[in-house]
Image (tube, rainbow, N blue to C red; front, top):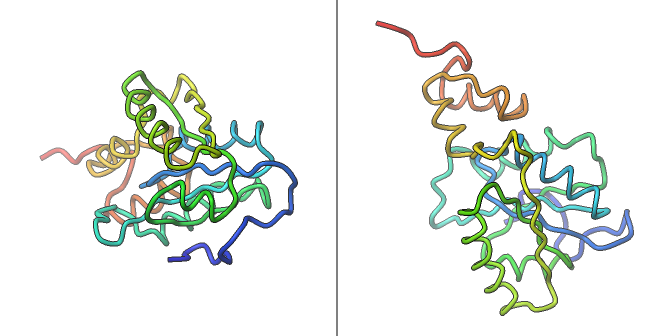
Length: 186
């Protein structure tokens, strides 16, 4: 599935240097995710934000197409240094296909590290040439997750501090709520 419209194969060489891939479900992308992308761009000349998609098991709030559009809108300021794509299957197979040398992962807490460490070791077993780099989330994002944002938004809570404006608009439309107004009292 090529939601991004990019051709298959390596990432275009508009910016020289190693390509990093930042994978995730991004359902929806949060300001914590954006923080990781911006910090990855301080280290790598190009970052591919790769939306994980499994057509057989996808129970996401937003479709892959909606997630790609939202991420593009949120990261438009970075121009050619950012590419947004979707993938299904093994991350290392995708990384090889686009010739990415590095996988970027964000960490919020020790519990994230345990899971990410296991995934990194399996990826290293499958593709030893692909490195994984962990970036710690900014302190203001330690407790932010897509799941928590969706839950707060479902009940009309204010998620402005946790998501970019494009996500807030799409959450309100998708959930049929007025975000930031709180729940109506009976």
